Length: 481
Ligand SMILES: [Fe+2]
Ligand SMILES: [Fe+2]
Image (tube, rainbow, N blue to C red):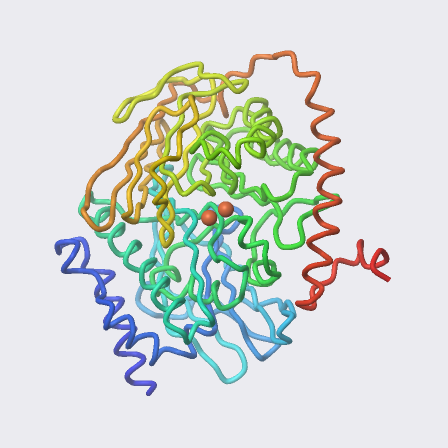
């Protein structure tokens, strides 16, 4: 069994490494091979090893499930020689096992490392990752991956996970064909559909995920269960007054980009604003500011969601404006869109497919399509502030090249390998963010306070619902008696 496991892992790794020189369709793992991997790598998949960005590229966070309370990550050089060992901390899950998390630090630029996890009598496969050299790197941005099913032994999660692996392999092949690597994975929420552990196990089942740092945020679906909280370990988490019970805000820096990852289920805008202010202050010399949160502000116009979207725009756009966020990566509508350059809820510069904006005085908001639940309602309209939109039943991935001078977005379909959208955001100054013009915004403190109060009530409802899953928020426990 162990031998078969290793052979399959090796085959997947070979597929991963060869994709650059082969055509996309020939290089991807077949559904049959994935199904075999699912059967034979049960223990490895169940441990759900996840590689997450650290505070900057000199760090990586590694987490996994374990029956044992103690464990460590062994770091290797590119020849497989042991360099160091990092002890993991343990968080008890509500299934009464542990999510172990180790922080690998002191990584050097432009190097390839190996690592494996060990806890109890279990040792993981060995995986590799590469640090970036300089400020240029490529991220793959996905959203609404929506992995779900009865449990991860059942076809649903396996097949949804296969679709994700196919998307990752296809995207990596495209990047390699362009002479690039994928240095970061970004997912803007709804990774699962019910917020269950099995869904997150499926999320990281692809060996590729264990070689590329994966940054996620909380979607409204992730919030349906308590497991996302136990599953994720992130750097620089926010100190929130009233956080949502599964997620929080966190930041990290890669190259010359500050990534501000936020939980938009949490309407406590005073907390989000304080988090962004602090993160920006700690990284004043970082040139680009990219936010990622789940709820779209300007994408599809779905009538039943318009009042919610109007409220979300009122809450979130002032933060993007005030702190000069260059790009917001969002999800939720499952409708691929790239907005115009917006400031104060208005278009200040139009964008067009294939175009370029230079020294934009506002923010570009982008939403990608869902990996497992493509939107099929053609009657859905679009927000008036959209520069480019594309509706398809295919899976979409986005390669975003970050460099000192520009952010270049290119989006592709998996099945037909079409470039469906692109935009270049260029900056000629070294200043972080974009130009901030003071505008009359007397309503902002009021919105913050209303959001803060609304969040208390949201959390009371959610905390009550999720007590069934054994999850308790001490702050609210007194209310339930
Ligand atoms: Fe979704
Ligand atoms: Fe959503």
